[in-house]
Length: 230
Image (tube, rainbow, N blue to C red; front, side, top):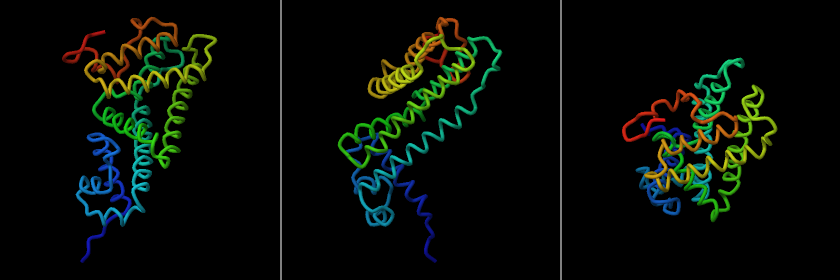
């Protein structure tokens, strides 16, 4: 009896193979032949599920964006939201924790960042990827703006801030730290990213970074092996 294969599951397997090749060798090496070999499939089998190389890349990038968005939604949903009457420092710590979810503080997010960088660079020379790259760019800006607006409603931000401009600053900070963490992990590790993020949150809230309590999700970074305590 022939084996029944779930087409969507098989397409996701191929996308995962694209991610592994992109992280290891760069997106330019994610040819049909290399992706098929990485997935352990015959080239003809891969062609059965995709119209061609462009279709593979589009599906992989869309799947990556959807999976990253779902991870962010689930992880952000587990973060404790302070009572509106809580001290400003608690709200600032929650703000930091939410922005920290956008940075590669653990292995899962680091791998995600490596794939994001490969697709972002690849989109410069692959027209079929540009709309998705633009969508991912806009989605991150929207997340930053929503978080800032929420913080503004509980009065944790300094008065008079231009939230559109501040969302652009947060976006640039996240992209810059992520890029440095991927390309220069020895000099931009979790402790360094946390220090920069805390300083920025301090500027947004007017609270000294030293006065902010450690967000629960970053607490394990405070005194881990080889890391400086705050």
